[in-house]
Length: 203
Image (cartoon, rainbow, N blue to C red):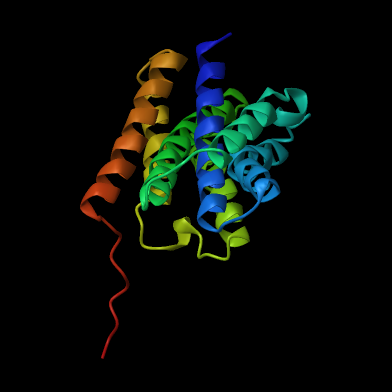
């Protein structure tokens, strides 16, 4: 079992937990937990694979991704949480999944011969698409469309991977560095309430 595969499983579990926590906040039944866990866990990677014409799509080729997501959803469904803990857990597991998927999405695209900019863009898409679907299904404005530092952190993750790759680092160290950059960026933004500035309106 490769180091990259372990990171993919960790990212899948983290995103699945974020989806299941969203279902928990909305008071959904077990089916809702399973559906919302799958959306962020496989949604972004599915879009990436379709754009790259990568067949079969990753979770069709290896059903362990789906299995991990479903197990995570069931674990969250039977868990007990303190008031307010669900929102915090959602945000932090989502941050971890975002960083992991942005780094690995960028790496996969570079392996397929895309340019650096396209790889970063598809890395961002890998990281944010599933969360967008999750939030829409919950009847909420997607996190990526608010003033939260989110897509920017995913972009920074992909850029960090590209720079590490250009510096000649091996794949595994580059993935770790990029993931840490993205997770730290997102974590600091949540901790200190960083946000992008709104447009200035002329009077």
